[in-house]
Image (cartoon, rainbow over all chains, first blue to last red; front, top):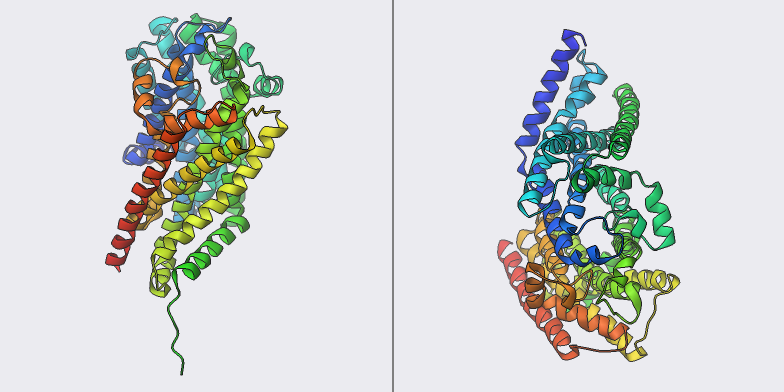
Length: 259
Length: 261
């Protein structure tokens, strides 16, 4: 990376991080909401561990994977809404007048998502462990879990950037939130894939990439080191990120031409 | 020369309701989430958690789909009211609410109008939800009267939630009050026995669910659908009490909006 590009990315990353940290309205719901659902689900579905074939006797450990994905979904909204606001206020138009490169803009904007992802992952894991969840992979597993969580957060963040560039409206980005929640709810979120007894639901969850992201996180919490599931989780997150980034780059070109 | 009479309670309520229903039915951004959210929860809970019906001690006679249908019905009732509160807040934020206040002879009619709109919205949502549940072979063991009682209970929840949201909307008069309408509703609903009956809950969630008034509504609703009514008096008593309580809250909100000019 040339020093000019590094400088451009650095400036925008700094702005993105400060912007995220200065908006409690972005950080607080992304942490509180998943923790509330964790508490409710862990309490309400405790008896699911009595089902034959359930992989652990702690439902809290099982469900702890979910906040990491919910938190990542918040990054769609946060990164997308920030960029949409830049579009709505004309800031992107001003940036378009500078020699700023598109890659620098998109990478810099994702810095806020990285920081938020990091904060979320540390909080979720700490709260989960304090509440009695297990982490079979140990301290090394905690680091990999945080890395995976940040990767997933950034991957979803690229979709937020694409949506903002494509629609140019914060309201449209916010409207995507329920759509993404469909992916979470139609996955092996509350029960393992093998225990999804409704055929059509099992079929959908089996092809839903979110199921495999959850399984990668769960493998660290429940099994220890399952390299196959981890590799699949990282690969899916990377693929989502690559698709999102490609779509966002294309939308950025279109938007800059329009402006 | 005849003087123009200020509009009475009924005509104010009808006019406000008509506009609110028209906005709801003609704007996909309002209609689609209102229909999709309950379906989405129903599909996710009834489909994804079907195996919970096999947990030792879970013996709900009409199966897990019916068990979850009652929760989703009451949830859609409550959120129908909350979404109507959003519409009210938006109207006051854009100044339309102030025009209502100027034009209405009986300002309570404004709140009644929104409540009427919330009921119509709820009936539309329930029609879709019930159709999907029946297509999904949901078992119903309750008599026609018991099923009517189930929907009557949901109606009370809808009116109570509308009054709650209206009270917030009339005090805040901005869509920024949305989380204040939504989060407590979400909280009280999910701190009830959502996934399994109360007896199968343990620890802190059992303690909270035991004193949560929504628990009685849920248990009564589940009793109606399975043909084994329980806590009927308590559930309707709580529903009416909540409606009166939040009705007074909405009335206070109306006074606050009037005072603000």
